[in-house]
Length: 440
Image (cartoon, rainbow, N blue to C red):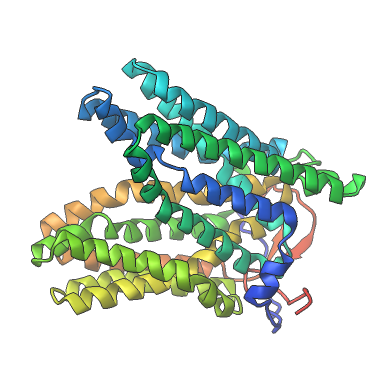
């Protein structure tokens, strides 16, 4: 099974746009998508408060947990569905359909009293609500200059994290008035995101010439090799996916093994909350500044360094129980998150053939979701065997992840040289290694 063809040329040494230049260069349709996504995250209350809502309606905790689990299963499948839909009907239309359906179905929960129906609807909401994610990432790649991709994904992450951080606080405020009001607002923000995406679609069409319209909207025109099997034949890309999976298993330990370790070392829940708040504060306030410099690095170096620091930070928790050591460890893995994630987020869309971009991006989300699902099980089991074992395991998995990252992202790739991909023969350099072609 052959891997993607590689080039031996040296990466060009060129400047990268500043934060201000990147923000100025973001097209209007992409701003609409970013604002719509922020709005959607601010109103994303369902997964956070679904169990409380259902138990308040009279369902048991077990029944509410089953409904939340159904949502989670639907979410994993929804990312894959979104990748396929993006390549078939276009990125903007996928966002419109995903968010409109999610909003309407979320609103219907207020009127449902049958547990089986609630479980089915929750699963379908998870399915459609996550379908927008590959499409939105693909739109960023499609509609922004290549040399802006890493910084644009940092902007995307900042909007996402702002919404994710502020959303639960807004949800708690709404609950003080009414659970139903909270779900009305959740539905409204989803439909609002659909409206922003539809407006972006109109703007994109008005800016595009007829010959380029299909490409502008993210619609495949050649109709060849459009299958997840084609993605799986790209063995170099599979190594990148393996790295994402291993990193997810390590990263998720901050929500599973870390609270157990803190409690065992005599620290309170307040300390755990403070460490999580430190992570969120650093990411929101500093990631754009870090990315200003990280975007100059070759793609594989940025991602490998980020993954490595996440693993080192987790490994440092073994050096407790001093509170200062926990703070240092949290800062280290947070820095790794800020260094590696924007580049890793931009990579799938950059290396994918145009007609498979949605599927490549969706395929990158799938191993991370699996890692987040099984990581807590692995971490808690390892911690119960030995409190130090889980952190040393994080270190060992990180070494493997760094190695496969360096191999999987080793050299500039050619778009379409995956086995059976069949895209045009144009060079696609790794994230962080492309020549600076935008005005600076």
